[in-house]
Amino acid sequence: MEACIMDGKTMRCGAVSGLTTVVNAVSVARLVMDKTPHIYLGFQGAEAFAREHVSPSNFALLIDYTQPIKQDEKSEVLAATGGSGDSQIGTVGCVAVDRDGNLATATSTGGLVNKMVGRIGDTPVIGAGTYANSYCAVSATGRGEAVIRATVARDVAALMEYKGLSLQEAAAYVVGERVPQGTAGLVAVSASGEVTMPFNTTGMFRACATEDGYTEIGIWPTEQE
Image 1 (cartoon, helix red, strand yellow):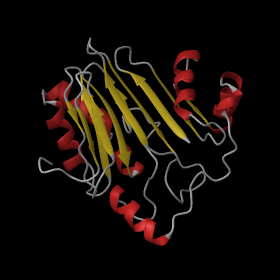
Image 2 (cartoon, rainbow, N blue to C red):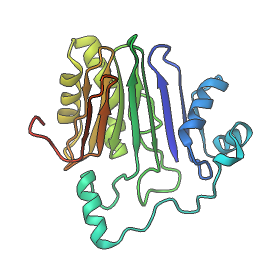
Image 3 (cartoon, helix red, strand yellow):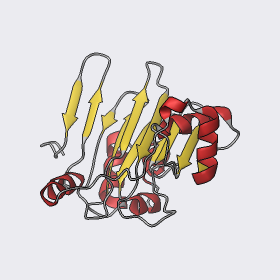
């Protein structure tokens, strides 16, 4: 498991990779942010840190957390994620803004199916799969290598900060122009509460909710997209 969390107001962040026995990897990332002078812990070091700071009830033996997929089910799942046989499944990302405009983001994933031992994806890489500052909070998903190369999450924030683009304009440009088609999507929110969830895959599981009761849930592109 890999996870990352970032506070846009303070720019504090924490990330972990290579967890195999922790149920909630993002909780360990939060502890790295809060309890250590570091940002990123991996593999045996992350496991040892987790066992020192996380309740035993949050541990489970995850011998193989990639569940077998039947052939007919596989086509449907991959159509929704827009990938091929080695695409990512199981990434969960969240972005939030409070009434004062403070932003935060967190992302957690089981990683790439059939990945090489030791491979690290975009999720725990600050600025790639996860990023927040005073302009926006972004959580990305897709082919990790493509997201890392394009520094997807940071590029959205940079386009807002340095070019004055809106969140929707910045995210649309990054997803549409900076990464190959069929490789990425993201959820993002700005300090003013603007929300966008673009993707260049066949579909992307996504949802948003506001305190005034508005909700949106989707998988496939809408007419506006």
